Image (cartoon, rainbow, N blue to C red; front, side):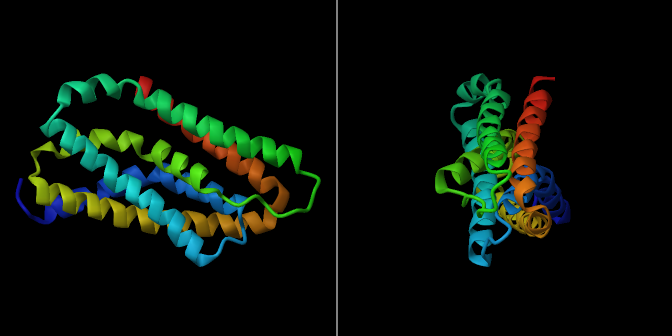
Length: 194
Protein backbone atom coordinates (compact mmCIF):
# COMPACT_ATOMS: atom_id res chain seq x y z
CA UNK A 1 0.00 0.00 0.00
CA UNK A 2 1.03 3.56 -0.64
CA UNK A 3 0.44 6.78 1.28
CA UNK A 4 -2.22 8.42 -0.85
CA UNK A 5 -5.63 10.06 -0.63
CA UNK A 6 -7.41 6.70 -0.92
CA UNK A 7 -5.58 5.45 2.19
CA UNK A 8 -6.82 8.43 4.23
CA UNK A 9 -10.37 8.28 2.86
CA UNK A 10 -10.54 4.53 3.54
CA UNK A 11 -9.30 5.06 7.09
CA UNK A 12 -11.89 7.79 7.72
CA UNK A 13 -14.71 5.66 6.31
CA UNK A 14 -13.50 2.69 8.34
CA UNK A 15 -13.55 4.91 11.43
CA UNK A 16 -17.13 5.98 10.72
CA UNK A 17 -18.27 2.40 10.21
CA UNK A 18 -16.54 1.13 13.35
CA UNK A 19 -17.78 4.04 15.47
CA UNK A 20 -21.48 3.36 14.93
CA UNK A 21 -21.76 0.90 17.83
CA UNK A 22 -19.76 3.24 20.05
CA UNK A 23 -22.00 6.14 18.95
CA UNK A 24 -25.10 4.23 20.02
CA UNK A 25 -23.58 3.34 23.39
CA UNK A 26 -22.46 6.97 23.82
CA UNK A 27 -26.02 8.03 23.09
CA UNK A 28 -27.22 5.63 25.81
CA UNK A 29 -24.62 7.00 28.23
CA UNK A 30 -25.79 10.56 27.54
CA UNK A 31 -29.39 9.47 28.08
CA UNK A 32 -28.43 7.86 31.39
CA UNK A 33 -26.46 10.87 32.67
CA UNK A 34 -27.92 14.11 31.23
CA UNK A 35 -25.78 16.18 33.64
CA UNK A 36 -22.48 14.65 32.47
CA UNK A 37 -19.67 17.22 32.58
CA UNK A 38 -17.64 18.04 29.48
CA UNK A 39 -14.49 16.51 30.97
CA UNK A 40 -16.30 13.20 31.55
CA UNK A 41 -17.80 13.39 28.03
CA UNK A 42 -14.27 13.73 26.64
CA UNK A 43 -13.09 10.85 28.84
CA UNK A 44 -15.92 8.54 27.72
CA UNK A 45 -15.35 9.41 24.05
CA UNK A 46 -11.61 8.94 24.62
CA UNK A 47 -12.10 5.44 25.99
CA UNK A 48 -14.17 4.43 22.96
CA UNK A 49 -11.63 6.04 20.61
CA UNK A 50 -8.77 4.28 22.36
CA UNK A 51 -10.39 0.87 22.09
CA UNK A 52 -11.34 1.48 18.44
CA UNK A 53 -7.67 2.27 17.70
CA UNK A 54 -6.26 -0.54 19.84
CA UNK A 55 -8.32 -3.40 18.42
CA UNK A 56 -7.25 -2.97 14.76
CA UNK A 57 -3.63 -2.80 15.94
CA UNK A 58 -4.06 -6.02 17.92
CA UNK A 59 -5.61 -7.59 14.81
CA UNK A 60 -2.71 -6.31 12.66
CA UNK A 61 -0.19 -7.77 15.11
CA UNK A 62 -2.06 -11.09 15.11
CA UNK A 63 -1.95 -11.23 11.31
CA UNK A 64 1.79 -10.65 11.38
CA UNK A 65 2.50 -13.10 14.22
CA UNK A 66 -0.12 -15.61 15.37
CA UNK A 67 -2.85 -15.64 12.73
CA UNK A 68 -3.95 -19.19 13.46
CA UNK A 69 -4.93 -18.22 17.03
CA UNK A 70 -6.82 -15.13 15.82
CA UNK A 71 -8.91 -17.19 13.40
CA UNK A 72 -9.91 -19.55 16.21
CA UNK A 73 -10.90 -16.58 18.42
CA UNK A 74 -12.87 -14.78 15.68
CA UNK A 75 -15.93 -17.05 16.00
CA UNK A 76 -16.32 -16.01 19.67
CA UNK A 77 -16.38 -12.24 18.95
CA UNK A 78 -20.19 -12.00 18.44
CA UNK A 79 -20.81 -14.03 21.61
CA UNK A 80 -18.47 -11.85 23.70
CA UNK A 81 -20.07 -8.62 22.43
CA UNK A 82 -23.58 -10.02 23.06
CA UNK A 83 -22.80 -11.12 26.62
CA UNK A 84 -21.05 -7.88 27.59
CA UNK A 85 -23.65 -5.51 26.12
CA UNK A 86 -26.68 -7.50 27.32
CA UNK A 87 -25.17 -7.58 30.82
CA UNK A 88 -24.55 -3.80 30.97
CA UNK A 89 -27.82 -3.01 29.15
CA UNK A 90 -29.79 -5.35 31.40
CA UNK A 91 -28.31 -3.72 34.49
CA UNK A 92 -29.27 -0.26 33.18
CA UNK A 93 -32.74 -1.53 32.31
CA UNK A 94 -33.25 -3.00 35.78
CA UNK A 95 -31.96 0.20 37.43
CA UNK A 96 -34.36 2.25 35.31
CA UNK A 97 -37.35 0.04 36.13
CA UNK A 98 -36.46 -0.07 39.82
CA UNK A 99 -36.11 3.72 40.04
CA UNK A 100 -38.72 4.78 37.48
CA UNK A 101 -40.97 6.47 40.03
CA UNK A 102 -38.15 8.11 41.94
CA UNK A 103 -36.73 11.50 41.01
CA UNK A 104 -33.16 10.76 42.06
CA UNK A 105 -30.19 11.37 39.80
CA UNK A 106 -29.12 8.70 37.34
CA UNK A 107 -26.26 6.52 38.54
CA UNK A 108 -22.89 7.66 37.28
CA UNK A 109 -21.19 5.63 34.57
CA UNK A 110 -18.51 3.66 36.41
CA UNK A 111 -15.02 2.84 35.21
CA UNK A 112 -15.65 -0.90 34.93
CA UNK A 113 -18.90 -0.39 32.99
CA UNK A 114 -17.12 2.02 30.63
CA UNK A 115 -14.29 -0.47 30.02
CA UNK A 116 -16.79 -3.26 29.32
CA UNK A 117 -18.64 -0.98 26.88
CA UNK A 118 -15.35 -0.04 25.21
CA UNK A 119 -14.35 -3.67 24.69
CA UNK A 120 -17.83 -4.78 23.62
CA UNK A 121 -18.22 -2.06 20.98
CA UNK A 122 -14.71 -2.41 19.58
CA UNK A 123 -14.05 -6.14 19.66
CA UNK A 124 -15.32 -6.54 16.09
CA UNK A 125 -12.61 -4.06 15.04
CA UNK A 126 -10.06 -6.85 15.54
CA UNK A 127 -10.95 -8.02 12.04
CA UNK A 128 -9.85 -4.62 10.68
CA UNK A 129 -6.31 -5.73 11.45
CA UNK A 130 -6.80 -8.43 8.84
CA UNK A 131 -8.04 -5.81 6.38
CA UNK A 132 -5.04 -3.60 7.16
CA UNK A 133 -2.55 -6.47 7.03
CA UNK A 134 -1.10 -5.08 3.79
CA UNK A 135 -0.05 -1.91 5.61
CA UNK A 136 3.40 -1.51 7.09
CA UNK A 137 3.59 -0.58 10.79
CA UNK A 138 3.55 3.24 10.32
CA UNK A 139 0.52 3.02 8.00
CA UNK A 140 -1.31 0.71 10.41
CA UNK A 141 -0.62 3.15 13.26
CA UNK A 142 -1.81 6.16 11.24
CA UNK A 143 -4.95 4.29 10.19
CA UNK A 144 -5.64 3.41 13.85
CA UNK A 145 -5.10 7.05 14.84
CA UNK A 146 -7.55 8.26 12.17
CA UNK A 147 -10.10 5.69 13.38
CA UNK A 148 -9.60 6.96 16.95
CA UNK A 149 -10.12 10.62 16.01
CA UNK A 150 -13.26 9.83 13.99
CA UNK A 151 -14.62 7.69 16.83
CA UNK A 152 -13.90 10.41 19.39
CA UNK A 153 -15.84 13.04 17.42
CA UNK A 154 -18.76 10.71 16.71
CA UNK A 155 -18.98 9.60 20.36
CA UNK A 156 -18.94 13.18 21.63
CA UNK A 157 -21.86 13.88 19.32
CA UNK A 158 -23.67 10.77 20.60
CA UNK A 159 -23.22 11.77 24.23
CA UNK A 160 -24.38 15.32 23.47
CA UNK A 161 -27.52 14.11 21.71
CA UNK A 162 -28.21 11.63 24.52
CA UNK A 163 -27.77 14.33 27.18
CA UNK A 164 -30.20 16.62 25.40
CA UNK A 165 -32.91 13.97 25.21
CA UNK A 166 -32.01 12.51 28.60
CA UNK A 167 -32.97 15.81 30.21
CA UNK A 168 -36.35 15.75 28.49
CA UNK A 169 -37.13 12.11 29.26
CA UNK A 170 -35.43 12.00 32.71
CA UNK A 171 -36.59 8.77 34.41
CA UNK A 172 -37.21 6.85 31.15
CA UNK A 173 -33.69 7.59 29.88
CA UNK A 174 -32.00 4.77 31.79
CA UNK A 175 -34.56 2.25 30.50
CA UNK A 176 -34.06 3.49 26.92
CA UNK A 177 -30.27 3.41 27.30
CA UNK A 178 -30.40 -0.18 28.57
CA UNK A 179 -32.63 -1.24 25.68
CA UNK A 180 -30.24 0.42 23.21
CA UNK A 181 -27.27 -1.51 24.63
CA UNK A 182 -29.16 -4.81 24.51
CA UNK A 183 -30.21 -4.09 20.92
CA UNK A 184 -26.61 -3.31 19.91
CA UNK A 185 -25.41 -6.55 21.52
CA UNK A 186 -28.02 -8.58 19.64
CA UNK A 187 -27.21 -6.74 16.39
CA UNK A 188 -23.45 -7.41 16.70
CA UNK A 189 -24.22 -11.04 17.51
CA UNK A 190 -26.54 -11.51 14.52
CA UNK A 191 -24.08 -9.78 12.14
CA UNK A 192 -21.28 -12.02 13.39
CA UNK A 193 -23.27 -15.26 13.20
CA UNK A 194 -24.94 -14.69 9.83
